[in-house]
Length: 432
Ligand code: SAH
Ligand code: SF4
Image (cartoon, rainbow, N blue to C red; front, side):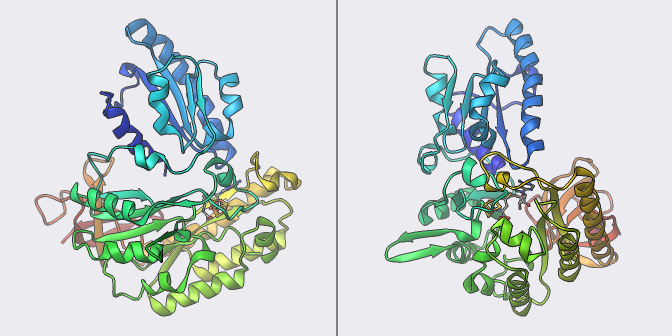
């Protein structure tokens, strides 16, 4: 979502003549769009700010214009009081619902400026349309979250759950498709909780996907992050193969496999509920595969409870995953619980969990060696000899330019790729 927000902020700044640059030294404004989901992400902001301070000092000598440093996004909200204290050279701080107020700072008196009271989604009415899009375009459909998981800072940093008007979303999708987008990724902290009332109807994510599917120029649609409690039957029915752009893959954060931990996390479901959703989806889409998010070392998690998570991971066979050590965050209910598991135990659990997950992922990737699969070309790869693509299961596929049987590989197109090699994280292949 920060990538999406940044692209909208860039489009806004361009209306007043600003230009994005990769070159720190020539920049006259630095904006850090920040994440505070775990302490590490938040702390990175402060270390990077230290580096920017030096750039600012150097640039001041070189450039005639004033140099600004701004912090936007979730750390802006989470650490608002702290930022000017810890980094007094920062000029402005804007939370994720207020970054469109940047001109109030740039055009006003250039003293310290802060706006962090999370108003509604008014930014979407103010922000100009983007002018260029990647082949895989991200569109925010809802923001904030009302689930209140006890470990999570999102309800504080992004605010209460609000869904954008259905027609605004469809217009934005049509706009990015007219610019060349071929894949649409719907974004939200609780994306499948999307709900918008208009014309005596409640629009849900089902309606958005159905609408996208009517557009022949869109070849794939995805959504992140889904919550198990919002996996409604209408959404599940979309996996039945009747909609070409739906993939047999779902990222469905589980967090933990023990009912006691899930309860204390306030996730609102049991492991049995989660299994039921998986079963329902498998009936509708027998080839479907799952990926997930997991947390180890939540306060009070016993070894037995951790083993339940490990067991569930093996049973569901998550083909990819993000797993984290619990990180205590300010403004969260879990902060009141004793963070009682020592770091070495947390790390040991993370290692055991990740080695089980890597084993599943490695085997799954290996199973695709010497097969032919469909791959969406997302972009150039970092290594210029390859293009970066995604399988239907969202595996990274690196496609050799020299071995492929086509002269040019077109970004945004889907090709049949023969997989010649697999590693735990990537597939390698050539277009046939
Ligand atoms: N809305 C999504 C997740 C958003 S945050 C959901 O409900 O699943 C992305 C992931 O970060 C979470 O799924 C969780 O695994 C992890 N996470 C969030 N807060 C965390 C914390 N305090 N410590 C460790 N991991 C955390
Ligand atoms: Fe955070 Fe996701 Fe829980 Fe919402 S559902 S509180 S975003 S972890």
